[in-house]
Image 1 (cartoon, rainbow, N blue to C red):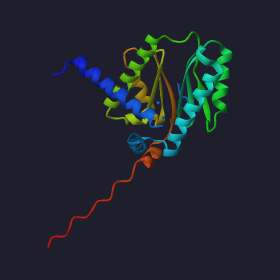
Image 2: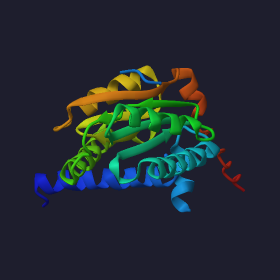
Image 3: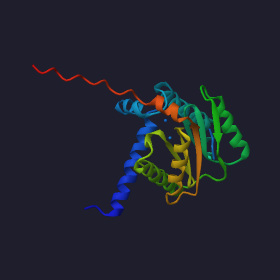
Image 4: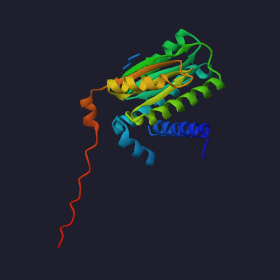
Length: 216
């Protein structure tokens, strides 16, 4: 029989693995091969938008590295062509520069700049953030009244950012769950809010049933 600690770590690691799949498949401020095929079925973005978001993240990160080099630590997350910037830069001017770089990237429709003007975070802090992200994802998976794959989770210096296309109920519920995770200092909702009717229209049509063969 597994100990409670091992069960908890297992759940966190499983959620972290899920998060890697979400990000790898391609990934409004109120207050992240076979894998691709799977995500198309559960992601609330169109297939084209998922691919577009991945391209936005890669292009933006590359241009920021070219502009600032190693003196900044910037994470770029795109969801439905909205870019979230987190991390640390040395000056306010650098923060504005990064924001302008992101805004100039093809297909970006808006940018949420939450960069800290400070020294770059330590490796131990980044490890802690990764662990918190895993715990939040695990908690979303455990919630029976939410679809965990509808959310993208980013953590920076113990601040959790939640992204996705969600209803007001889902936005409130997910934020409550994230706030209850140990180590979380703050939750920032970076959602595109949709109605319950819009959500219902996204649901896949039920598969047609094959009629049973007639008895002789």
